[in-house]
Picture 1 (tube, rainbow, N blue to C red):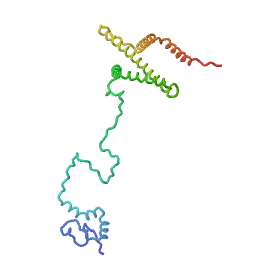
Picture 2: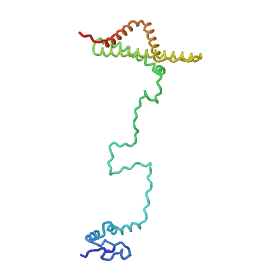
Picture 3: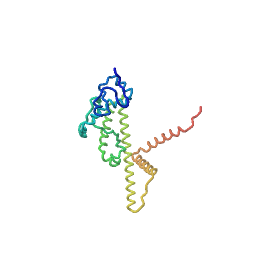
Picture 4: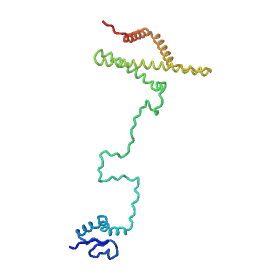
Length: 242
């Protein structure tokens, strides 16, 4: 079998159409596989690819340019590829991140005003009074047992809440009276005097003392106070050695 040789940029072999046309490219369609391997080993892989694909590239360059596709509409539905498996839980609509909001410390809920709050929710006092009477009735029916202890603790908690609410209202009334007094002094031309926190606590204790004296509970309050102070003093005493 005759072997093809490449010398000086020409391929030995039968004449081709490219040579007849005066083109530098050579027609390799009539060459055997062994001749093609020999040609690739002589000229190199890059030059061999240019020789083999040169005619097809020339034909493709003669074709008219293909018109570009139109720009896709941004409002059309999203096309999913059939090669990619669609997830089971797919997010169709984007959802914003949930942010926890505490109405106690959020500016959107406004500022806390105890006077407005007490007036708005004043109806709760009647509901608490009815619940307290209901607990008392149930406590009379159950003289002992676990249910009796639960009702007793519930009644004590209700009474403590009621006492704390009364104390808060008393302090609120005292602050309101002091504010009105300062306004009256300002209208008269005097310079208003703002009490310190220690002075406000003393006024609250004085009002509490007057209230206990009117209700005749001052002696019991003072006796509890003495026992509590004696217990605190006993803790600081040194232990006796026997």
